[in-house]
Length: 264
Image (cartoon, rainbow, N blue to C red; front, side, top):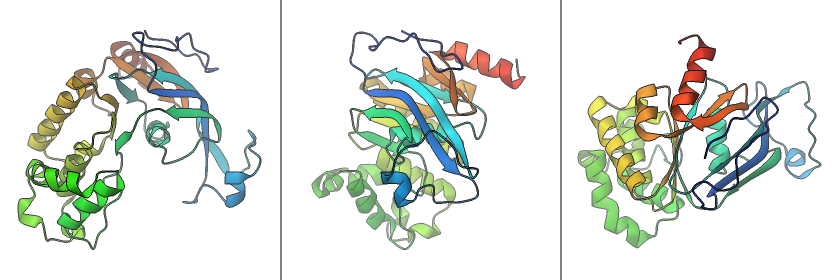
């Protein structure tokens, strides 16, 4: 079941896709950021009264976003740069909290959003595998069991004792994807990071994503590649200026996005 969302954020979408309870439910979610500052919230912002009014130094990165996702769906998220795509994935990953509305994630999330997230420059590759996998909930025994598999997939066996900071960008992507894709979490978030890797490894990662989807995983996939979006996703979300413009079949979403962008 798909839906079209108008500029007010209203939707005709029923609560269940394919008769299944949603694994992710986002209702009227909005998030504010501050301009020209890295930190977005003070203690008062977090625990004080929540207001829908903006101060002069704030803007809405997302506003009135509503959708539901059933287990096993593959969702492509599209929109121009700066329209809220990465922010939406961070909300689903619970890296940031909404300033209004609700984000209810009913399953664990494996986020491949920022390649440096969870990795420490001065630790070796080996140490970083144990640290990052552990931070995502994998036990020491599970890491031991999967360590050789992680390293082999990343093609990084000659660099186990090398500090992470000395790896190339492509090697960091390979290591991050290999660790995150070995987690057992039901929801996988992928945000453009694979564009850094070489073509052969990117195809290897895509084959791994297809394997995870075949196993029933849920995917959020942010990409500017229509070919890749069509490969993985049957449904799309189109964000523009922080609002959900269209939620529907990926072909419809790409067509609308192309018209609005002047490429159709």
